[in-house]
Image 1 (cartoon, rainbow, N blue to C red):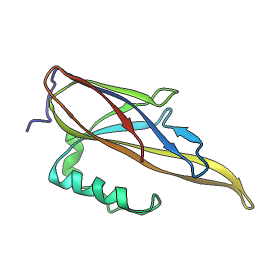
Image 2: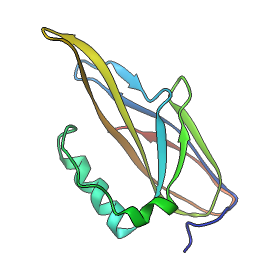
Image 3: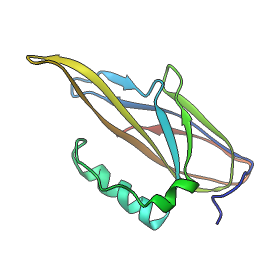
Image 4: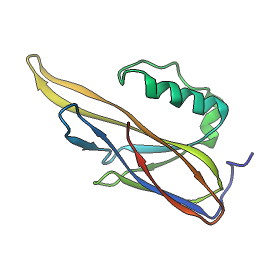
Length: 130
């Protein structure tokens, strides 16, 4: 499998969502996943792009877990994956925040994602949003 092991490629980027009012909410401190872009994963994320952000998902296939790499975004929502094999990937980050409503505090947000292909020895920067 091309996504297992280490390589000499790097993917960097930033994760954020914009509110309806245009305010930027960054993925600070949130987990960013680097997921191999297969027909299964690509179809899931292309569908996600067309659905409302609060749509509930069926759990993904557990066999995929061993191929997913994770990191934590810094205070500005920036992240980096080093020493990865070349290939096509999906980056995903769940970003949520609280807001005051008449009942107290409510939570909203969604999943930011992006698609990227990286060659051997290449470094690419990706914006992960929606």
